[in-house]
Structures are given as structure tokens and as C-alpha cells.
Length: 464
Image (cartoon, rainbow, N blue to C red; front, top):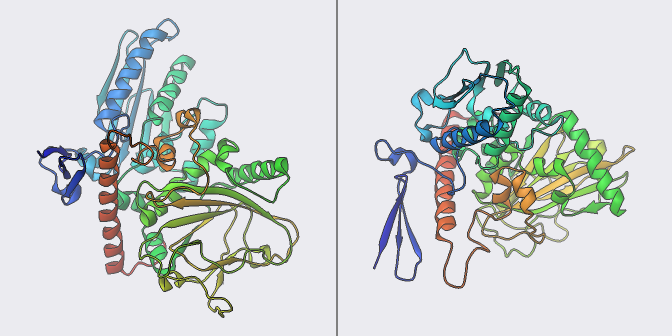
């Protein structure tokens, strides 16, 4: 007997007698029934400012206000309003707004904006979501670092804060609320909407055409310096020039692994559910490059598949110039679907020159090599390697519950927590995670096609 369940108007999942799931896809959010809201989360997650997010905020505030009432000094209010929310949330005018008001006795949480609130936060949805996913802002300096990186990615006016709370306990309450919600808040699943808001539409096209793209100044100089110091410390402690498992070498690496702009390129290349393949660090002094011309498709038969299996983001922790020994790429070589042959002459290679804090992302078996360093000092780089979700990681999987708790759900997804691999049991499959990832994949594929189609029609190749 076949059973069926409908997910947000997008797919009918039919189960056959073996328990296998047969997925019948529709046309995405545009094909929803009237009044339906497409959701792309597991049951313990929610999208930023969705109804589920608002319910979670209300429950947290009601519980915490009741327990902290003796410490709170009196009434306070917070209101946030963000424009350009994803269309699938179906918010009026694509404006996501909410207000929390405490009158000294009870707290109320409602949709809508109150410009007269004690603390008012306004701006663009995607920029606000980037801050909403940052967990751990109660740590000294963490909130300032969060805003620094939001400004770096979106500009100083993308999120604006007006007013203040006079009560330190109310400040602590809202900081705790931020972290509580951040542990369950997923990334915007609409690839087109997200890439547009991040200024990455042209980068997605360039990645398809050239096999690589560069995000200049993707992190602040301050964060780049922090990452460089932490990398050198980890390498020195082990007395090595390269090191794996950098995710477990400190908080800066956890945050970098979730860099939202890089993850948008990864989603566009590998689809949702990509897993961390290897997060490594390399230090290189003056002299010839030690990594010859190659692709990252070791042991993959020729011809390579016509879809990306891996994607690598190499982070520059100092300025990359020809003299510094940068990575060299052969644009378009990914279209050959093969590695370079022994002794083959290669022409058209270009050095990747970019300022400190930038990342070059490359994919689909593009040809590349490490350049010669002619200037003094060391080149210190982080190599963030991701695999399509159907592949497993190069580094053995280590899931630390405390790490998952102090980060947004996106890190868990990259560690395989949201897919059905390693969750199957002898008596059956994890149908919920299977269906969840199928929905994300289908929506991502649909929205990537929209990016390529619209940018092609507009003649966009690089830039936003």
C-alpha cells in the first residue's frame, strides 16, 4: 500500500511497501497552494522570522521573564524590521518585522514594527540573518566582532540600531535570546535571493564559466589577522608546515567554516548538504612552489562528471601577489573533464592576486598549482575543502555536541547531521532527513538555474 504526505505544496512524498520514498517534485514555492508557506527545515530548526521562529522567541521570553522578574528593573521594548525577506516566507511586502514588549509584569511578542520601541533594529533581511546565525555573543567582544563582519560583508548601513536598553539585565536577556534562536536558525534556502542580497550573482556565473571566482575582502583585516595568528600557533604547537582538522583548533575556524558568502558559492556548486571534506592549513616560506599542477579529483575516473564533486576555498591571510607565491589557475580547464597529462604543456595559467582576507573558490576539477615565492616571509593559507553530500569527508568525522550547541545549524549540516547518511538503522531509513535534503536540493537547483538564466540574458559575467 502506498501512503503520501505533502510538504509545503512543493512535493508529494509517496512511500512504497519497502518504505522507500518516491519524490514527486512540483515547481517550487511558486507552485504552492494559496496560503501555504514553504519551509525548508527539520523539526528542530526554523527560518529567520518565520512563524516558528516567532513562536520560539515568545516561548523563550515568557519563560525567562518569569524567572528573571525580580532582577528586571521595569518595562522595555524591542522592535526589528528587515526588508527584502525571501518570497517563500510570504510576509506582507516581503518585510519581516516583530516586536517584543515587557510591561513590568508580562511580555508580549507580535508581528509588526514599532518605531517607538526602546531598541529598534532595521535593515536588510539577509544581513540581519547573518548576524542572527552568530551564536555566542555573550562572550566579551563577540557582539562587536559579529557586527564588524556583517559590515564587512554588507556595508555599514545594512543593519542599523537605534536606542538602547537602560537595564543591563534586559540586555543580557536579549543576548541570551539571540543565542538561543541562533542555535536553531537555518540559512536562507533561496539560493537566488541569497546570492542577489550578497552581491554574488555574477560570481556564480563566473564560477561556472571559469571554474573559480574570487571574493575580495570577504572577512575583515582584523579577523584575517586573528585567523593567521591562530593558524601559526596551531602549526607551531605541532611543529609542522601543514595541518588537518583545523575545525577543532579554535573558535575562529568554526566561524570561518560557516562564512555565508563562501557557503553560497558552495551551495551553487555542490548543492545543499555539502559536507566538510578537509579543513587544513599550510605555511610556505620563500622558494619554488611545492604543489605541482594537478586537480583535486584524485582517483576519479576520466571523464570527470559534468557536475562538481568538490569545492575548495583558499583563504589569503596576507596579501597575495605574484611574488608571494599564490595559487595559479587555468581558467576553463574544468571543462576538459580530465587531469593534466604527464609532461603536458600548459598555457593560459593566471596567478590569483587578492588582498588579505579574501578567498578564491574553485571547483569541478580545475587545473591549478602553487606558485613560487620570491619575497621573504611566509605565506599562511587555510584550505577549506567541501564535498558534495553524497561523498564522505577526507577527515574522519568527529561530531562534538558542544560544538554543535555553540553554532548555527549550518555547521551541523556540514558535518552530516542533517542528511540521512550515518542515520540509517537496521530497521529502516531516516525518511525525514532524506525528504528534507531532497527539498533543499530541488529548490537550490531551481534557483541556480534562475541565476544562470537571468545573468546570461543580462550579459553578466563578473561582479554582482
